Image (cartoon, rainbow, N blue to C red; front, side):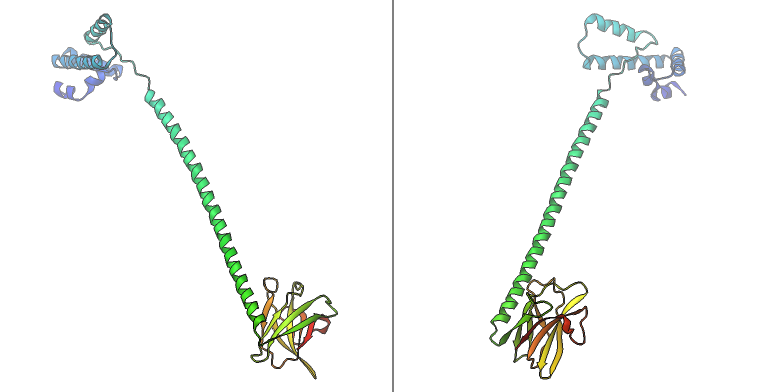
Amino acid sequence: MNSREYIESGILELFVFGKLTDAENNEVLEMAKNNPEIQEEIKAIENAIMNLSQSVAPHLSATNYEKIRTQLLEKNKVIQLQPRKNYAQYMGWAAAAVFVLGFGLQFYKLNQSNETINKLSTEKSVMQESIVDLELKKQDAESVLAIVRDNNNIQVALGGQEVAPNAFAKAYYNKETKEVYIDAAGLPAPPEGKVYQVWGLKLDPLTPKSIGLLNNFTASNSKVFKVDKADDAEAFGITLEPAGGSVSPTLEQLYTLGKV
């Protein structure tokens, strides 16, 4: 490697800054000893560093400045530069801590926002369910009113019988259309596995005919049920039967009975 290649390799700058190993320093000193061009380059680098340091360093007295200058210009000797305290590292850690705290705060606020949104969504769902429930109740009420107010419907009172003296119900019977509605608000909720069954009766001879089950009794708000049509029914009765209903009424479980 010739002197120009050696200079351009950057090793002389590292030598001046004291970044080489002892073996590498000895190599540079040996090269400079036998090569004036390398000696001049080392001096030029030292002078450049000194001028740069003078332009940015705090004010030094003339005496101290000359001492430093003399030491810098000693042949083949370089003052080892003391590394500055790495304030940037501490600032980096501080910035990282601030970032973590800020991120944590934002994450906490985001969680709070999500919880608020979820709460509002839940409240909205509950409100929507309430509105739907009210609408269904309104429709039921309107349907019941329409049945009660229909002049073609005959109201038949069904009184409680021996198994349930306090029970009562009403049948709304349209003799023209033969449609039947049962208002079962006066009946107790049926036990699990049981269902109320409505019978249309002819009295002479006594002939019962099933006209429907009061399914979903507990779920009904109005307790008004439309059952099958009854042709020329003379009475109506309601019995408690096993789930699914019976072919013939269980008279021991006759809850209400009423004549048209």
